[in-house]
Length: 264
Ligand SMILES: [Fe+2]
Ligand SMILES: [Fe+2]
Image 1 (cartoon, rainbow, N blue to C red):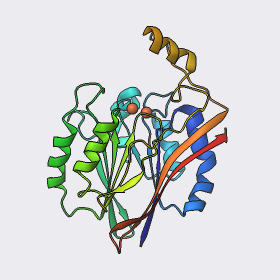
Image 2 (spheres, rainbow, N blue to C red):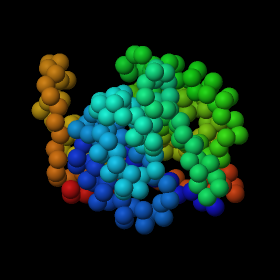
Image 3 (tube, rainbow, N blue to C red):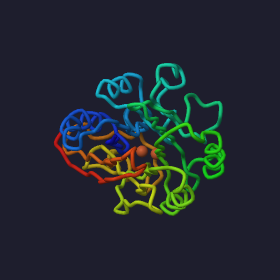
Image 4 (cartoon, helix red, strand yellow):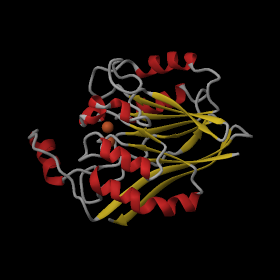
């Protein structure tokens, strides 16, 4: 039995959502996809994920959404957390945050666990040490799943690799998100675990990481915090990773990073 999994990098705004809608049927066909995960932290105007956008993703056939530092960017997740069954937030966020950081899905009598973590270095404070938290978490979920994937949402490449090396005998895939730049280091670590430092983002090409260029230049050059918009049409990146997992061999048998550009 094969799991053909697609992980879509941070979907940024309307153009990113429309891009997913447009390209997903052909990608599903091409890779025979039967399970889809996406990072939704930038889905609604770059900031969080509204219930309306969450519903759209569910309608498109996405199975699980992960998040990151923009998790609380839209009020719907803390006003109506009960509506977001398939949305995760980083496990090492404060315990009183809404939603959960890990979830198990049934897949043809196999159990797929998805866990969302957030990194330490150059990130906002208020989260528990991700290494310690995850280590402790693993002791509580032994023998509860057949496949375990982690979205490690972090800035520093070294920290992401360190997390991957520390846990490469414990989980099957560790996929980095947050920097919005797809890295060229996709590999199997220690004969077990798929790892990529960052999967990249799904949003406007003519932008800075998905956001309006002028606003981002003002922010970077002069620390001027103007409202950030983003291009809603035009050429769009679709960044993702495809993984094939063979439950009989307990191994990842294929992997490929995907980077396409389509007009939206
Ligand atoms: Fe982020
Ligand atoms: Fe992001």
